[in-house]
Amino acid sequence: MVGQQALLLVGFLLPGLLFSEAAKILTLSLVGGSHFLLMNRVTQILQDHVHNVTMLLQSGNLFLPGFKEEEKSYKVINWFLPEDFNKEFKKSFHFIMEETFKGRSTFDHLLIVLEHLGLQCSDLLRRNDIMNSLKNENFDLVIVETFDYCPFLVAEKLGKPFVSILPSTFGTVDFGPPSPLSYVPVFYSLLTDHMDFWGRVKNFLMFFDFSMKQWQIFSIYDNVIKEHFPEGSRPVLSHLLKKAELWFINSDFAFEFARPLLPNTVYVGGLMAKPVKPVPQEFENFITRFGDSGFVLVALGSTVNIIQSQEILKEMNAAFARLPQGVIWKCKPSHWPKDIQLAANVKIVDWLPQNDLLGHPRIRLFVTHGGVNSVMEAIQHGVPVVGIPLFGDQPENLLRVEAKKFGVSIQLTQIRAETLALKMKQVIEDKRYKSAAVAASIIRASHPLTPAQRLVGWIDHILQTGGAAHLKPHAFQQPWHEQYLLDVFLFLLVVPLGTAWLCGKLLGLGARWLCGARKLKKA
Image (tube, rainbow, N blue to C red; front, top):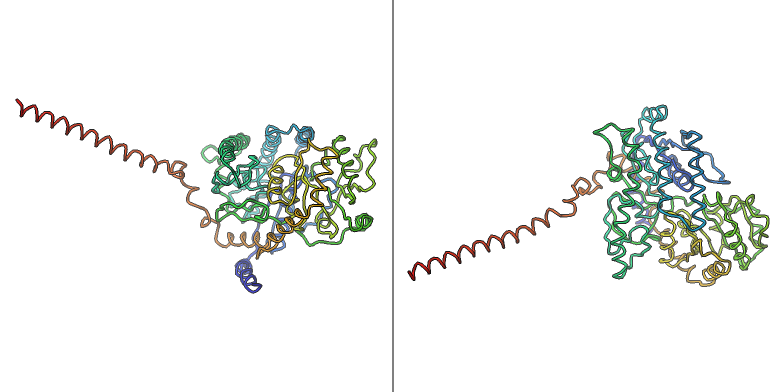
């Protein structure tokens, strides 16, 4: 078995090893938080595998309080937004986070964020110094990330082939894969792949809602396209999605529901995985205090530190106080309310080594917001989860966690000390959650190729073959009425109806002729 895997690995990577020249690759990171962390990792992996990689980085909105940035071996081109843009964006983002903590997050809030990103995109495309510099580099390939659609427009403006990375759950955007509604849940339907009749009805109706929302998102960039692309050669965003040479999905079937894929779609969930290092001594000293009871890790993402609701902090702190475990909580100490006494078993920190703590032998539970990167790290280390979804794809991610039975979730508006404590004790004490988490970890780890090897191998493949035309179905070039066989259905409908009508006419003529002949005989 080991020999077969080694042969498979060599067979897949050999073309990349034979690729004689390092390619010049541009990656774009125009959104902060976990989006930046993912693109930073992708860029570093490609740089480490002999390619010459440059990142265009929007430096103003990283949203990573306490982030300890490592030295980069790749080249960075920094793009700074005008200060008024930056202030307006941060003001809107603060408002949306406040609404989220009050349980009032809506799709319109996402549109507000994307409208700001559209304005930022216009500013970037207007920057001749940056755009001309990128053109002069003559990159072989561009790698874009799918949240902000500006990177697609940058790649199109440069006239270069591009690869797209989907940072979130499969289905957040429609880029052409087959999606049978009978068992592939529409994004935000909160359905699993096991649907009863009413579930399929809901999924069918949600498809139209999803299509309308995607159209609203795409239309935000209409003015950007009109301003920066000449009439007659203006791209259509929905077409640009299908123009991507490859789609890398930041997920894994240990987490996702099984579904059909196109040949140019590759799962690379787990790219963020790194070898576990010993945790800093301050954390080890704290963990040791609780002996075999172990500890709980609490980290609610890169943006939650921006806004901290006193009421929620109070309830969570009270819930943690009911646990026999220690609790290491990523929560801004400088913003901790003075009137709330921190529980004796809780340690709050600005920053923590999440991967290393998840890999610690005494961890018992991970309390997370349900971002894909965090869930994939929990799967990697076989750690069960209690999820508190905030916004975006997080409710869908935690639905999958519950469906795979390695965790439970609780809504932000339902957080009370007793309820949260019960949820945590349930997952810690019922060993079935831990067993399911370990089973998911085995599935993810047993691939013959690591996520990084898949990323590099496929990128080398399209660099050598001049693109991925051989991996894309002809359906991408077909008009919609051909793709859905409407012309065939029309033909099959018209032929029998036309034949029946013709036969009826002929029978009518025959009947009239016989009647006329009989009358002549009688006469």
